[in-house]
Length: 203
Image (cartoon, rainbow, N blue to C red; front, side, top):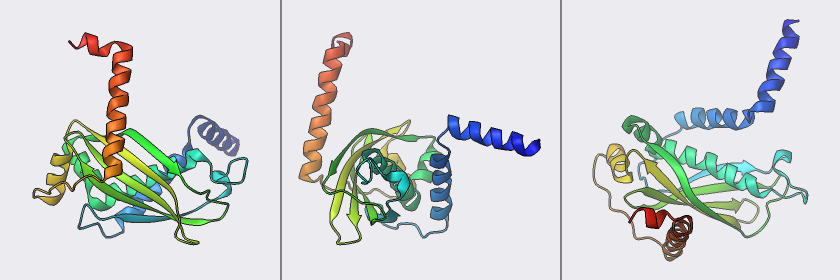
């Protein structure tokens, strides 16, 4: 009877929550705790992956949403390595995705090994900007590239960097593609605010 209750409880849990997502998050956290951290917060960090049957779409490729999910875990790993995660916890801050754009260049196929290379490109007064690349281990081809704006809530990027580095770090110059992307999301935000009437209400 007890075994039946346990099985029913597990079925209910798996039906109501994405249990594997949370277990994967715990795995990333534990693994990162036993790895040496990054001395340079601007250094890139690589995590390995392989396309499994859970990642496949109807055409036998890694499905679009899985790229974003893998980026999620790779960013969390990166923040553990460069100290941003613990610093944000210490400051009572949260880091949430404000925008992301991914460009698919070539499919990743079943059982294909890849790496995700995550790098902080820069920051402003409200957010960090990161690039994440999916690189096939078969031939080093960049299969997909994602740009991400990570908003900092209840703190600022400068405060997080000061907490980690204990000194002022100059923000590197933004690459041209990042400048264009920031311009796009800013223009899009302004247009949507105007469309919803928020611009008029703030005057």
